[in-house]
Amino acid sequence: MNAVAAMPLPRLVRIYAADAGYEFLRLLRAPGASVPMLAFPAMFYLLFGVMFGHHGVQQATYVLGSMAAFGVMAPGLFGFGVVVAIERERGLLALKRALPVPPGAYLAAKMVMAMLFAALIFVILAVLAAVIGGVRLAPTQWLALALVMVLGVLPFCAIGLLVGTWVSAQAAPAIANLIYLPMSFLSGLWVPLAAMPHVLQQLAPLWPAWYLGRLSLRAVGMAHAPLGPPIAALLLFTAVFFVLAVRRLRRAG
Image 1 (tube, rainbow, N blue to C red):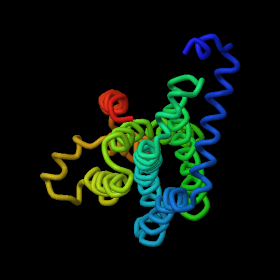
Image 2: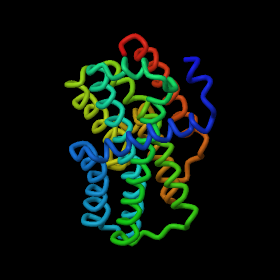
Image 3: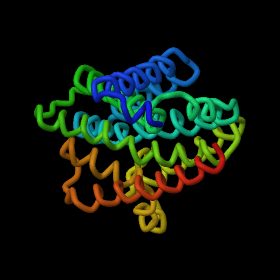
Image 4: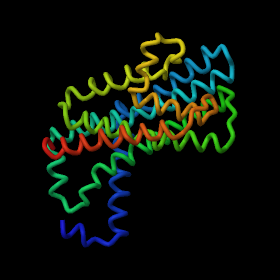
């Protein structure tokens, strides 16, 4: 710990950056995880925004906003939930504690990895929307959507971390999917909430994906809700799940 505290700041920055880069490359080189993560939002966008896009550019724009929120959930839930569960069972977390590296480097690297994947998903969706969907947004709107996606992955990193510290490596993919898919549906990311039963509309604010969807739809001009409440809700979700996950990690890691 003293050796870490005595490290000069540039060296600490290099350690954090190297860890994050290795995490990103490791997940990118695991096609079983990275390909579905990158392909599913693109596939659903083409399906619902273009092929079944009976309302033209307006629908393509709306689906861009909803698929942006859907897409960035995966790097957090699976990049944290499944990977942390596997590494915890293999004893890698105990090994990390024994190494002379900053104690926060492990989690910071995974968060940066998730944010990089969110940025990559944004690029894929933006290209498909502009080239195939005919979507035209102002530069500030594209920038706003990119920021929503890159920062919006963090609540799901916290949820994924809690999953990874709580369940076994074998159960983690199933639990992550049980969170990912139902939450996406119940948050109105696949079907607009207006077309769903009233009781499901009432329950939508319980899910962090709903708030992220509000922000992404606002970024593309398809919603006009105020910024404050969704941002505050996502910050609260992030803080609560992160605190619970870190406490659990200290006991089970």
